[in-house]
Image (cartoon, rainbow, N blue to C red):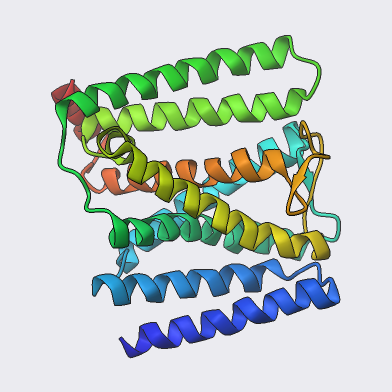
Length: 284
């Protein structure tokens, strides 16, 4: 308990300091401090609320490397290279190392911890439900199919905001196929929970997405550590934040990291490829 209180205290100090650096001094490297502060606040709060750590060290390391790989794919390959949807104007090689080895992994943890903390406070996880399971399985498959088709169309036929559509549909495909695999092996995941307790879960997801979005994006309006470009309606803003980024981008930043987290937790059951094939066959 004392350690959690210390984590929260340090987190609050880092959160305040990072906002002062961003708002008052336009410091363009504020984000690492902000992210660490929010992470410590959430981690300590989760332990105090649930009397246990959200992840043990072994699982934390597994999820860390998954988020590291996700960051390289989502940011370096798709965000910067293929679609050029954002840029980091003041970054050097050292800053990029921090970005991929700290910011992206801990950004994923912040979103997962944020939603999971809200869930532990406001909702009791529903039991497995056959009707919801069938609906969620079909939804995952439809989303994957739409994402794949949309990605193909975007690559070959779309000209306006091509990068945005490529990125968006690839994200839909990845999220859909990941959830489909999870559901074929293990029922009762987040997508199924949404079908069982739709309103409660959707409210929590929206709260987690938009509260975090505002916390992260507002100071960046002054610091400009990252700059969005080539987004549709980029000039339309809410609290100064591009509305497409806030309403859709941050929503994806709840769904995608949580799906990756669920997939890594699922792999704890899998000892080897043969075991994975057996679990899929058994579930089918």
